[in-house]
Image (tube, rainbow, N blue to C red):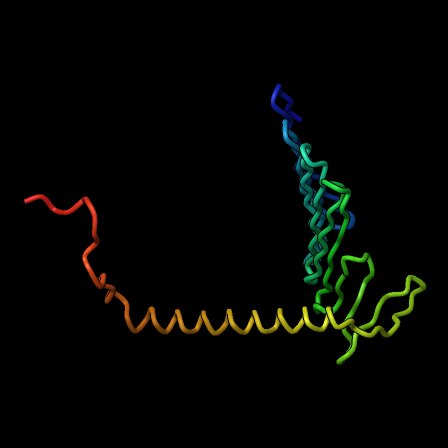
Length: 174
């Protein structure tokens, strides 16, 4: 570990030859906050987590990812004490709501985790249905715009000409 007047940095690693598991961490801090990342691996299985804490706002954000494609992001503290998290499984079917509940899509319906180990059916509110529809429409618009841009770029490459000379100062001297 190294420390100075403007912060500190540290790193460590470990390996267990009996299990073939390795781990590593890097951490740091400065005037405005602290950060770090830690990972563990065993063969092709791995998990990594990173953290950033902002000393000004008091917010801490953490992100965890796995070799199976799972991901979780949490945010705690901060202005107004807002906390939240969102997660997705490797198959992409589990989500966390801002209300702190965990949901998953099952066919055409949604289910909410009840905390007792059971998934219970829920009816999406009109706001949730509208929000999902808006996201879907926005994604389609993005795809449409992207295809228009890529088509225009390839067929008109190098053909840009201004339609009129620029007005104002800065003209060529004679």
